[in-house]
Length: 264
Image (cartoon, rainbow, N blue to C red; front, side):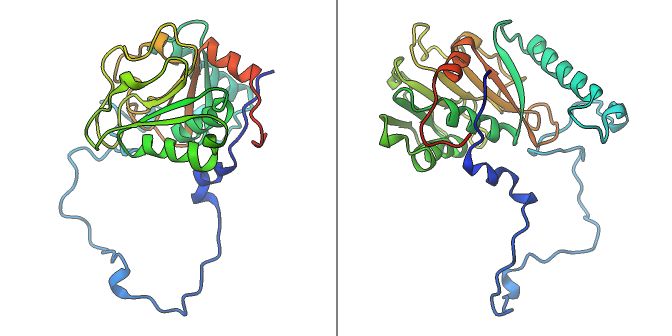
């Protein structure tokens, strides 16, 4: 049976749900530090107010009345819950053209949770090349070094560029695991069409954060072993859930590699 470990630092994904005591600062607060809120209605409104998490605009013709109400308040373990999850997975594979032998899963904690799960469960078996050119990719590098402490056991190479630029991805090694974002969420800089920097004969895995690419750009599945995204970006859906797409090579890594000193 294939199992995924939940990262210890996954608590940060649900920070909004955790109640913490408010520190006592001797009840002294500078008014200048407060964001003053007005009760007056705004005089300027967006042309399209239908925005969701992300923030991303809802699709043309969106109407909340079109949502299937039979699942409201129902557990994902219920019959209808399982049916809708299965439909979401099968439609994802069909629309995106995901190969038949790839697996698609729906996981908690949005794209961040999906990518962290992949890192915590798969990285450490080989040396790692982490490519980043914007804030989210930089975050994956920080997690690999600070939380996973990969540098204690394997070689970790940082391949980076200034904000708004694309690094020299030819520096990646096909014998290493490669982590990268397909399209930088905060910078808008994407990899070139086809991901030709990834070797067809690679022995390492590719872990791709594609949250601002899936459903908007062509995904070269033969180059991608782990692909993650969330519904809240291109689809304009709600946050909270992530999608994890695994190639047969990624599944083999999950089933054969057990990292040390990581939580179950």
